[in-house]
Amino acid sequence: MASSNCFILAFFVALAFASINEGLAARNLLQLPTLPPLPSVPGMPQQPTLPTLPKPTLPPLPKPTLPPLPNPTTIPSNPKIPTLPPFPSIPSIPNIPSTIPSIPFFSPPPSTKSP
Image (cartoon, rainbow, N blue to C red; front, side):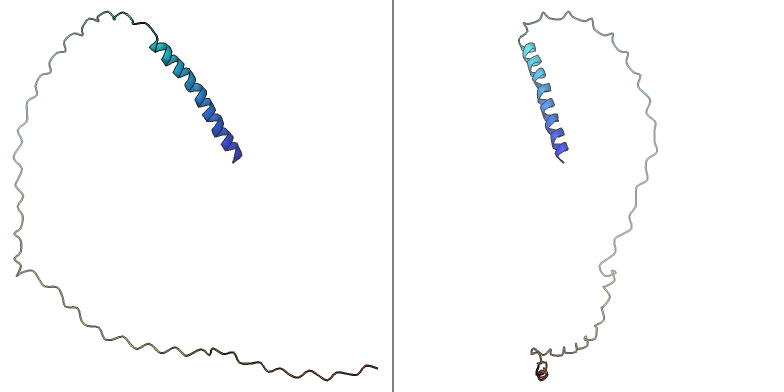
């Protein structure tokens, strides 16, 4: 990652030094004295005119005929959607007890007497 950053930095430094020379060259060009006008160049010979091409006669295109629009009385009505039976009832969720039952502990064994 660091090598790419160094490469990018080196690229920008090289670009900065390259633009210095261009700026100095442009400044030198602006400081030149006015040059004498260029000699006139003889004109180009006149181009011959292109002959006009005859236009072909095309037969007329047939007019498109559209079918007549239907009357609103002939448009079929939307089909009736049958009514659905009611959903079955959802069974109730059993209650989870919120108290934790106590775990019975046995009494400790009697201690033995050591001699």
